[in-house]
Length: 188
Image (cartoon, rainbow, N blue to C red; front, top):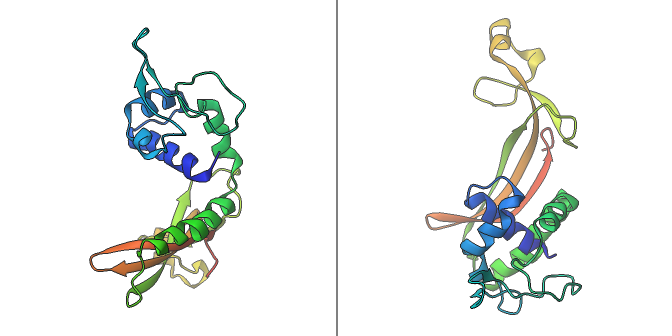
């Protein structure tokens, strides 16, 4: 299953405020994702006999020849999202997605590029890989705990975090992500 479809499907679920993959069939049939798919992948029609909405599609694996209601099964979508490493998502976004942006003229040669680092705090869960624990002040700025006064130490807190490093291209009053990387919170 292509990465663009996995991302579009998961975003479609989130935009419909669904946190469960079991809502996939309802969301894909009622949402706008179908209009973004190529007709050879999926098209929407009403079955005249059963009055059910059907999506005749070939799917992504050429194994299933029976008519389907969705481009892929909810379990396939759920498992696929877990199987893709974060580095693969980043490489896809920083490579093929940026080539599409360039093709359609998103980047102005005279435009401004801005590098931005944002800390992403995560729950205290040992399953998160590659993060660090850092000290932050009351405004969530990183601090060196050893150099804080006793009063400043009272407001400092420890957080498990990553850092999202973004390259933004500013054009007029908007911007587009020209690249990104998710790294441990102490990487500069």
